[in-house]
Length: 169
Image 1 (tube, rainbow, N blue to C red):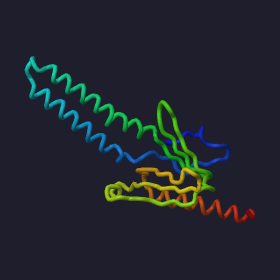
Image 2 (cartoon, rainbow, N blue to C red):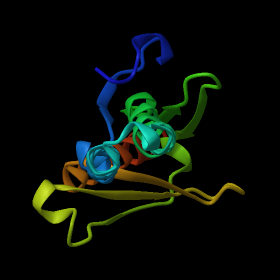
Image 3 (cartoon, rainbow, N blue to C red):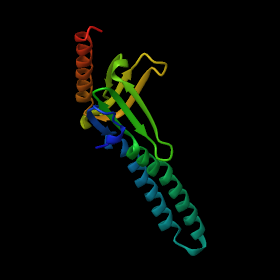
Image 4 (tube, rainbow, N blue to C red):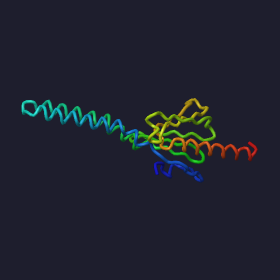
């Protein structure tokens, strides 16, 4: 489960708990392969002891590139979680500085999805949540089963508004 139970209020039920689809890691993995290929190619081509310093410099640059374009996106992916309860939408991300955003379901004005050509085979997409606050839109990228997630949130909103109507609000 991606969302910790300690984030929930008493009586609050977690409906969906997820992180970004692993598709978000395809580009960082491709960059890893390319940087390793560059390092190995330079190592093989240089070969002589007089040029070992060049191979070390290239490997150092590859290591920095791997840290920035592969390890960092993986850590961001690993620490980003989304949760939908019967009361709110929760997002959390970050390691050193943990950040988050909660939107009460009563404040949600619109929910839309974007599924581009690359997302379709994986069944993921972006979920766009509009609330009337100053922050406006919240975009959750690479949400697995985005259409089902949208449908379940719409169902929660319908139930919430039906309860409020029954209570005379």
